[in-house]
Amino acid sequence: MTRRLSQARERGIPEATVARLPLYLRALNGMAERGVSTVSSEDLAVAAGVNSAKLRKDLSHLGSYGTRGVGYDVEYLIYQISRELGLTQDWAVAIIGVGNLGRALANYGGFVSRGFRVAALFDADPEVVGDHIAGLNVEHIDELEAVIRRRDVSIVVIATPAAAAQQVCDRVISAGVTSILNFAPVVLSVSDDVDVRKVDLSIELQILAFHEQRKADRMSGGPVMAEEWPKSVDLSISPDVLGSLGSVPSVRPTDDGEAR
Ligand SMILES: NC(=O)c1ccc[n+]([C@@H]2O[C@H](COP(=O)([O-])OP(=O)(O)OC[C@H]3O[C@@H](n4cnc5c(N)ncnc54)[C@H](O)[C@@H]3O)[C@@H](O)[C@H]2O)c1
Image 1 (spheres, rainbow, N blue to C red):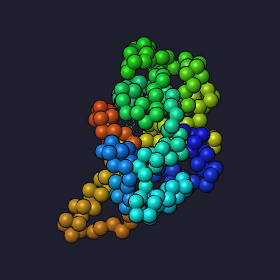
Image 2 (image 1 turned 45 degrees about the horizontal axis):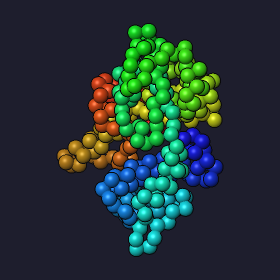
Image 3 (image 1 turned 90 degrees about the vertical axis):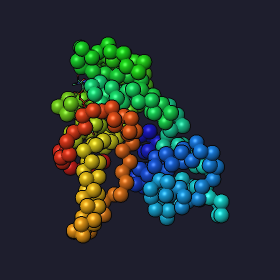
Image 4 (image 1 turned 135 degrees about the vertical axis):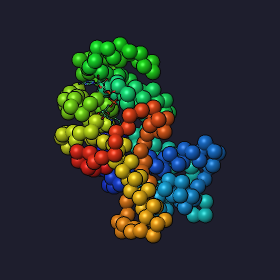
């Protein structure tokens, strides 16, 4: 994915557009499943939760303009966006830290249908190493470099405690991986050629709490804040994964206080 995303950047596709492409893709896949063959920019914008002018601009970066009076061909647009995101090929993913979160992610079946195959699971705890999860044996973290190379892993998910995350990250990068999805509540230090995406459910909960407070203020005629927070946030995690996490951290600011 990194290679494709880098290509998108090189071709001048704005980062914000790249970040919205998965929203369009998810909406389009839903339409394709319902047998919808063409869609207007307005309908697609509503389904994706963005403004239609922005959507048309985003899709024009892919060379997709739709047909006046007809709209966009759903299947073809799925293909175009998937190709741009590098999803037309299979990506091998490794999960490091196979505790509550790592297990839930490993067991989530939805990655495969989106082109992500969990190819390896690592943990440092001898009690966990050897466990059989979702068709894989958990391997010892000492095997990291060899297994990453052998299985051609290109994306790593870090689900270790915060204290272990930077060291794990450094090893992963030394093994040649440049795309990391970090769940640990720590800001990882990496060089510019490494892409790190951080997932922090507590930040998403804070945003929801903010909207909840605004709704309550409106009902009571109290103060309404002027600044606009994002109305919808794509957690990119399905409710079944979320439900199985068990221990979502309490609502409080993270180290960097920043949603990325
Ligand atoms: N981003 C979010 O929204 C979110 C949500 C839940 C949890 N988390 C974070 O995800 C991480 C995992 O949470 P959890 O509840 O699964 O914790 P956990 O304690 O259940 O699991 C952590 C696992 O990492 C393993 N581990 C520790 N050091 C390691 C190392 N050096 N190499 C490999 N494995 C190592 C442990 O043996 C354990 O199995 C934590 O950092 C937690 O704060 C983030």
